[in-house]
Image (cartoon, rainbow, N blue to C red; front, side):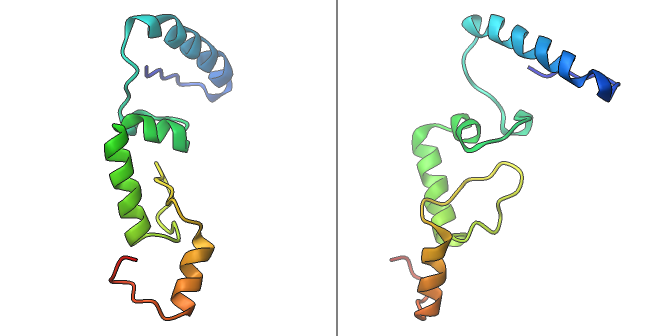
Amino acid sequence: MLSLWPDPTESEAHKTWTRATHAALSTYTEDVSFPNFIAEANAGKVAAVDAPATWARLVALKDRYDPGNVLRHNHNIPPSRQPGRARRRRAQGADWNTRS
């Protein structure tokens, strides 16, 4: 559900009715969303956009190409590993073009 209003001082009131309307209508709709319309992005909401197999594939790509989570803005896909492990591998001279 998308709602817009011109006066930023009325944000809380509009968020309240928008969330209440969404909750009331949710019994009649499927629980799907589009990533560009997630206003308050967190890992749970971002993950819910994709099917579980697709999300797992995206996390695997993130693990391979961005284990330090440098590209973490907007709708982040967090890597499954901690960034500290990636730094240790680099310090040990690991080849970043191969997957271990």
